[in-house]
Each structure stands twice: as C-alpha cells, then as structure tokens.
Amino acid sequence: MAFEKNILCIGAGYVGGPTMAMIAYKCPQYRVTAVDINPERINQWNSDQLPIYEPGLDKVVQACRGKNLFFDTDLEQGIKEADIIFVSVNTPTKTFGAGSGMAADLQYWEKTARQIRDYAESPKIVVEKSTLPVKTSLAMERILTNDSDQIYFDVLSNPEFLAEGTAIHDLEEPDRVLIGSHETESGLEARETLVEIYANWVPREKIITTNLWSSELSKLAANAFLAQRISSINAISALCEKTEADVSEVARAIGMDSRVGVKFLRAGVGFGGSCFKKDILNLVYLCRSYGLNEVADYWEGVVRINDYQKDRFVLSMLNAMFNTLAGKKICLFGFAFKADTGDTRESPGIFIARELAEEKAELVITDPEALSNARIDLADLGEQVDYVEDPYEAAEGSHAVAILTEWGLYRDLDYERIYASMVKPAFLFDGRNVADHQRLFEMGFNVFPIGKAPLTHY
Ligand code: UDX
Ligand code: UDX
Image 1 (cartoon, rainbow, N blue to C red):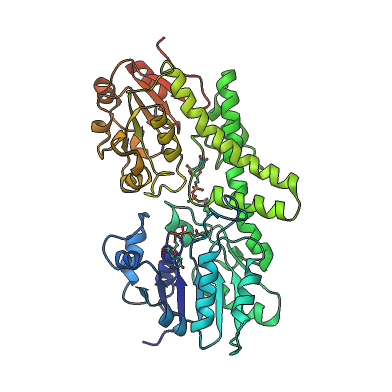
Image 2 (tube, rainbow, N blue to C red):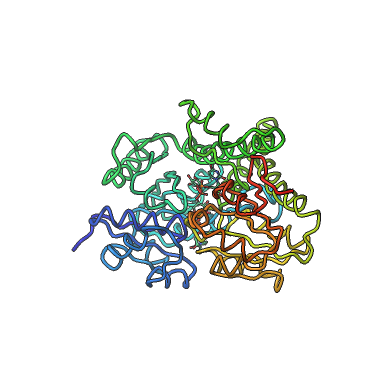
C-alpha cells in the first residue's frame, strides 16, 4: 500500500522511540521510521526486549512494527525518503568550554542538521523535538539553507511534554500539543501539516500553535515551573522537620486551592531525570547571556534547593545513626529517578549512594527495573556496592533501609520480615513518604520520613 506521508525521526531514545510508535499506531496511513546512530539500540527496538522500559510501549510497538513503523540505522536513505523529519537527538548539558555545566551541548543536534542538508533531495519539514535553547531553530535554518541546491526547509518547534513511566498515556491523551512556526505563508502551511498529523487522535482544541520562539521557550519554562513546585515543597519539608508540621498535611492544604492544584507537591529526596536540571540550567544560562541576572538567580535557586534536599537526606541519616556509617550495611530501596522506569539519569540515588560510600558505608541496592543502570552509574565504587533483585534479600543484615524511589512495591512489603532480618536498632529513612510510618514504628523501626517528625524508640 502507498503511504500518505513518510515520517522520519532522528534519535530513537526515550522521546523519539515512543513518540514515533504512537504516531505509527494512530496513523496507519503514514510510514514512520526511527533511525539512530547506535546500532545496538536499533537492534533492541527490533527485538522483544525494547531499549527502554515504559508501561504499554510493547503493545504499541508490536501492533505496528514492520507494518508502518520501522527502526533502522540508515540515516541517509531515511532523510531522502522523508517528507517530515523529527529531530530528537540528545542535547545534554555541556561539560566543556564556554557555558560548561550550564548550556546545552548542541553538537549532535548541529551535526544532524548538516546531515539533513547534505542528504536531502527534496523540500522537507524539519521538526525540533529535542529541548533546545530559545532561538536554536534560527541556527538550524541557517545551516539548512546554506546550500547551493536551494532545497527549501521549513523548521517547526514541537517540544515533547511526556513524562517517563507515563509516556504512552501522555502521548495518547496529551494535556496539549505545542507547535511553533514562523508566521510566514510557508511556515503556517508547514505548521498545518503537523497539526493534521496530531489531529488524527488529539482534539483540535488541545493543539496550540505559537511563534517559534514561544514554543522553544515554553518547553524550558514548563519544566522549570514543574521543578520549582518540587523545590518549593521540599523547602517547606525542611521547615516542617524543625516545627513538627507535617509536609503531607501542608501540601494537601495548599493543593486544595484550585489556583495551586494538587499535583507535583510530593516532598521527597529531590527531583531527578534527564530534563529538569538540564533545562533549568539551560534557562539560567540563557538569562545570564541576556544580562538578566536576577531572573537567572531566581531559577538557579530551584536547582540549589534540590541539591540541598539530597544533602540534607544523607546528613539526617548520618545524624540519626550516631554520626558514623563506616562499615554499616545500608540498603537502598529504589535507584530509578522515579517509579515505573528503569532510567537513572540524574537520579537522587546516584548522589546519595556516593555520599554514603564516602562515609564508608557498605551499600546494597535493589530496584525492580534499574539495577543494570545502577551498576553502570556506580561502577567505580566496585565491591562497596552490591546489587540484589529481591528486596528481602537486599535488606537482610542491614542497619538501615532508605527508600529512594516511590515504587508501589515498597509500600506493600512484609516489613515485619524485613525488620526481623536487620541489625538493631533498625532504621528506616523514607525518602518518598510511601511507607506506613506508624506501623513501621510499632514494629520496632526508628522511622525518619521527609518533612515529618521522626518516630524513634530512643
Ligand atoms: C532527548 C534530549 O535529551 C531531550 O532534550 C529532548 O527533549 C528529547 O531528546 P531522550 O530521548 O531522553 O531526550 O534522549 P536519549 O534517550 O539519549 O536519545 C537520544 C538518541 O539520539 C540516542 O539513542 C542517540 O543514540 C541518538 N543520537 C544521538 C543519534 O541518533 N544521532 C546523534 O548524532 C546523536
Ligand atoms: C519531566 C516532565 O514532567 C515532562 O513533562 C517533561 O517532558 C520531561 O521532564 P520526567 O522527568 O519523566 O518528566 O518525570 P516527572 O514525573 O516530571 O518527575 C521528575 C522528578 O520529580 C522525579 O525524580 C520525581 O520523583 C520527582 N517528583 C515529581 C517529586 O519529587 N515530587 C513530585 O511531586 C513530582
């Protein structure tokens, strides 16, 4: 059958893979291909073991792979055949040169723009999916149009708002889809083409169109706002611990104001994930480069509070455990940056494990999905860390358990059994406030939640 359109995505990662799978699933009339420079990743996309763990993704991929969804390494062919090219390569924080530690590293992204220019033989719509600094599409346009063949490219910005663990739901029923374009005749036409694609399953009123720069900035600002809520409640959690207020009660009272809303007010060990920190630092860098130092300082504070929260957690462990962790076995329940994902990028667990290792603690890490990533993240700690699938086995003989990821599993464990197998006095640090603290205390645990008074037997 002839397909109506050929859609290509460059970069088959956490964003590109699921997004293309959903487009293919909802639009059998389009041929969708995702390419990646990493052949191993492509092999995984073509196997039963997908490269990322995401609830519901298997079903969507299986329904259309080989029919109208393809994973490939042939970038050149892909570019030649495509009408629309999504670019979803990674844009990590720069680790060198000007803006090191703050600005976005655009090297992969720029290389991709050049490849599109070099291989394209017909006009294309190029869609920025990667999160980028404002005005990046201008650079992309300059690279694409700097060519004697004069092939015409329209550049659109279409940031992705999916969250890991709920990616399939977020793609299927997004709060909104955002598409930015130049407001020229050809820009508006390209924008309408992309609107038509999403309109196959997203109600029109949820598809917002803006100018290019608003779209690019909205993505950075949306992530900054979300992260800011977490830092706000975490900052309040520190005060709760000093005043006997309970952060869950405070969050509930604040969140019931419909102007504030209940979501994203869970205090914890701090936010992780590949986006929040990177995007805020990117925003901060952008503000500073425009001389907006007060604005930059304001947003930088969100990251500072996040670092403070992780520090505070380790210090409270040290404090509670008689100021020495040397030689003590500490078991970490969860290592993924949040529940329902195996992803550990920027996970608070990485920082906390390293700090505990500094204190010469012996670590045992358990997590239902993230152990293979944890092994890579902490490879340099060698023998000081054990990785154990089964939480009961992991906790055996430990002085303390610290819950770092809000996996539902950790709510429902048989804590009597865990308590019985631990060294006494047994400590439980609940970095996500998921366990039943009163019950744990009654079993004998010394319990240290976040933003609530500790329950101790001494
Ligand atoms: C990435 C960006 O980090 C994020 O800013 C953006 O919003 C969406 O895309 P993610 O999908 O989570 O996020 O990144 P990752 O899982 O690392 O995927 C990027 C993929 O691009 C990798 O599979 C990598 O192999 C591939 N890639 C990278 C290319 O195909 N070509 C390159 O030149 C560079
Ligand atoms: C985020 C945005 O939600 C998404 O829109 C964007 O496209 C990418 O970045 P993600 O990083 O996958 O998605 O996860 P998210 O659910 O936002 O959680 C981020 C971090 O915040 C996690 O570490 C999570 O545990 C933490 N968090 C979240 C809290 O500590 N408290 C909360 O109330 C909510």
